[in-house]
Length: 257
Ligand code: MF3
Ligand code: CO
Ligand code: CO
Image 1 (cartoon, rainbow, N blue to C red):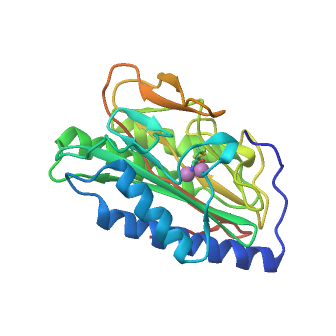
Image 2 (cartoon, rainbow, N blue to C red):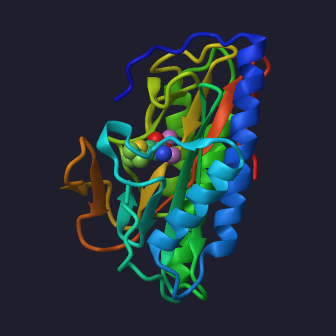
């Protein structure tokens, strides 16, 4: 889906990215207050869509290549792109990744987190912690002149050490004046390999971490060009995502929450 290559943004464009990303972070923070036993993933979708519109922004996923909802809600064994449903009711012990992407003034801000419903298993906590720690290890590598392989290598190292598995075929992306741009940002790789990170461009770091293996099952989302993905064996998958500005000296987490 990545099509447009990363280009340096102007100062004015960076301001716009800062604004939409701050808004996306605020909406994700709001989402965290809604996740409770008894709530449906469609309830989350509707509340988050309303909040997004009331901030003057749009939900970028809605109608994106035919995607039917405003957000993605990926529960338990769903790796990503779970579609909210009125009959999917959260219950104690579930984990759920809520992924929000806002569009404002022609620019996109993309962020997600895995939340716990009530008390969850130790395994759930460990998989989610590996995804979060792996994301921050990847982000720590972001600097102009580094490469996407530096990000992926750092992420994978943390996730492997925790005993879990990074999904390889799906990952982060350039972002800015389009939702998905080049480069592809993998959650695996080798130092000093892959695409160069360009000063004043933006990208996402969004590792998907599976409990038992990197492979996944692909399920079509009817009526759209999208699929959602699940683990092969019904075990857990977790994900976190930030939108990052690449700078000469390092980076800024534009969606910091
Ligand atoms: N927000 C997702 C990402 O991190 C993309 C969702 S696209 C959708 O890239 F169409 F599936 F919603
Ligand atoms: Co993304
Ligand atoms: Co996202």
